[in-house]
Amino acid sequence: MIVAVKQGAHWFHGLLAYVIWRATGYCVSSLKGVPVHDSGRVCVLQMNALGDVLMVTPLLRALIDALGPGRVDVVVREHAVPLLENFPGLGEIIPLARPLRWRDPPSVVAFFRLAKKLRARRYRAVFDGSRLLQSAWLTYLAHAGRGIGFRVPRNLGPFTLEGLGYLYTDEVSIDPSAHMIRHNLALLAPLDIAPASERIQFAPTATHVSAALAWLSASGMKPDQPYVVLHPGAKWPPKRWPIERFREVAARLQHSGLVVILVGDKTDERVLRAIATALVPPPLVSVGELDLGAVGALIRQARLFLGNDSGLMHMASAVGTPIVAMFGPTLPHRTGPLDALGCAIMKPIECRPCRLYYTRDRCERGHNYCMDLIEVEDVWSAATSMLEQKERA
Image (cartoon, rainbow, N blue to C red; front, side, top):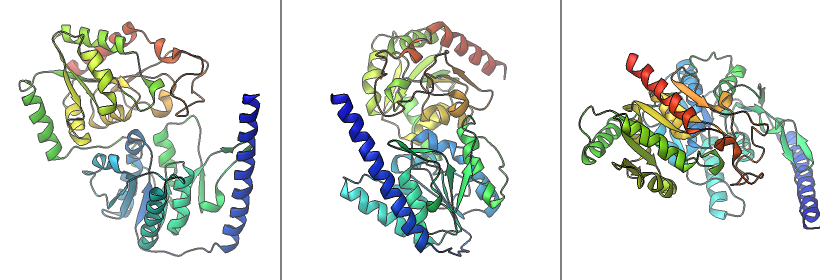
């Protein structure tokens, strides 16, 4: 009975949202003119996680190469700003302090202030790489010469919207099986701009490098002492490989003569401590002591990065550090490393990609099979192979 009520409520809310969407579309379409802006500037919206911001950097590079330095702005979440602070030729980094939530009045005020700010810039084009309804509305409210976004199906209860046509001037169709970087580069097509490279870009600042070196020195590391970085965290819990298996791989790496450094933010502290307390000698642990840019500098000097599908995995790819990454609910051919320095490990399972992506913190099957199928030997074999490649390079 309860299930039926929930399903009925979901259907009703979907119907209501669909009717509102169609009615709003009729009003918007009847009022919408075609703005003619020639400011020469463009803006990219990427309001998702750290990895998504890094995967949009090839799009930023192509736009800067085509339009010139200082003509490409970007909107990102506030915590992602350090990823782009040292990006050559980038214009303004516009931080989004809080995502839009209609029940959170300050976030609504912040959203419309941001829309007003973007509108005042009179952009030639706004590129929406976020795939969010709020970013689509922000694209529309910016009133740029071109509003460019993805044409992807979106579900409203029992209804499916094939596109958001009235919020964009250009909707780009994409191959659902292609890598996210290639999706982002497809947004260049309406302006006839050719992509320069698919490589993710991130460069720590001199301040970040100094902070990383100071932390290593304070932790007792000798200059040029080899180390590996392990990141057992992930924003979405089903992406995390079991703690005890990380601990076993860490112990083997220590036995091979490498210093192990565990990194994460405050939300990862319990996991990092659980791994560290069982290891002898104890590994180095950074739990939020270093800011994001300094963590990137730390990863750049590592012999290997080993972790889950996460923003730090993409950062390792950007700085050229060999990667071993464990994939469970997500698809490595869509979000994994693109270059030869990356090794993505996954095991066959019929429910990948997970249909509950970021909607629940636990697998509906009662057990996180997709990650548990990956054995210690799988990861250890990949790690030793990548370390050997690093030694030969």
